[in-house]
Amino acid sequence: MIESMQCSKCRRDAVIYQRYSGLHLCEQHFNRDFEAKAKRAIRDHRWIVSGDTVAVALSGGRGSSAVLYFLHRLLHERRDVRLMAITVDEGIAGYRGPAQARSIAESIGVPRVTASFREEYGITFDEMRSRKGTNLSCSCRGVLRRALLDRLACENGVTKFACGSSLDDGARSVLECVLRGDADRLIRPEQEAVPRIRPFMYIPEPEVTLYASLHVEGFGLADCPCVEDPLREDVRRILDDYTSRHPATKYSLVNLGEALREPAAEESRVCERCGE
Image 1 (tube, rainbow, N blue to C red):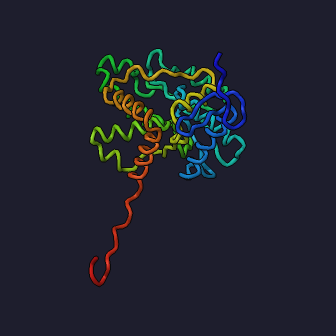
Image 2 (cartoon, rainbow, N blue to C red):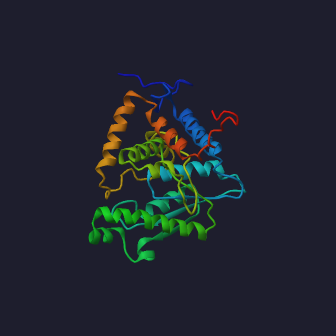
Image 3 (cartoon, one colour):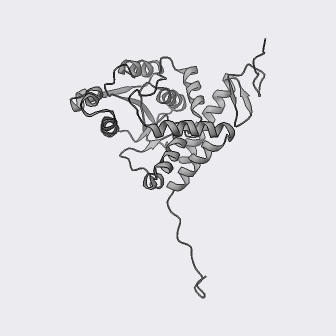
């Protein structure tokens, strides 16, 4: 028999090995480490302030479920910040139905509002795809979903949208921009009607999945069945393979994206006498 690995901090059985830190962590110390990273991201970016109403775009997937649970733990005793969930039913058969999101929000104890493509636009995504094809429909889907989320946010006084995006999501986004030559998206800050915050931006995707599995029942693990982007899949595979040999790669890419989106520094000053 092979003995289970023990936590590097307390000798309990470990639930995860962090290759980048060299630590085995039990459930208790994993939760502490995970939540400390998310809190640090919020604090460093000054993402949540008194008077905010924070909404999670709750799809029922691991990222949005995990961030809803985490923010409820973080904010439930604060009277100066309000937390809610917003769910948009896009009408994709067999993928993250509204009942799944409703069950998760109720189990955590967070108020929720809903809307659907059918009610708002008179058509579901599946119907759009049957008429327009997958690629065009996916582009329209993102625009329509964001517009509907922003409208619901404004109607409910939302000041920040919290996303469950992980370190892997951020790193892949930066690398995709590089490979597509999309300099504009890479260097310009995002312009959004309601600012987005990403508490898990420095946390690897497997850790987000583990955190969700420890605290939330009934979330979905499946990726969207409609995505057909060969470059995205190539980037995922290449990045995971390279990171297996160089564990800091994804952190470096996320930090690069952050640095490029910062406001440009003032032009260098020159000597008034010689011009150097």
